[in-house]
Image (tube, rainbow, N blue to C red; front, side, top):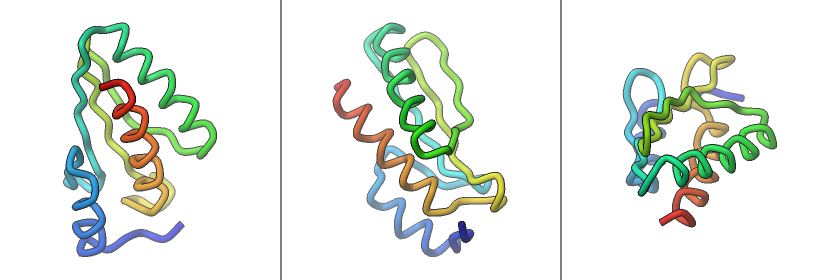
Length: 96
């Protein structure tokens, strides 16, 4: 999968208001009502990650989930990252 240019990443990320681009990855932070809701979203995201064979760097503290997406094989952001971000957005939106 080909590495995306900074300009293209900046254009694409406009469609993902919860996400930011820095440090060669796209990042988002989501806050849920409680730990159970956060962990439920993480479980659903995990299934999408497996289906796409693409796995995030993420952390969870109580009700906050922080996610960073970067394609390690390409050493930066690719279409794969935006495809997973789109799936994550759909899951998190349902949780709201």
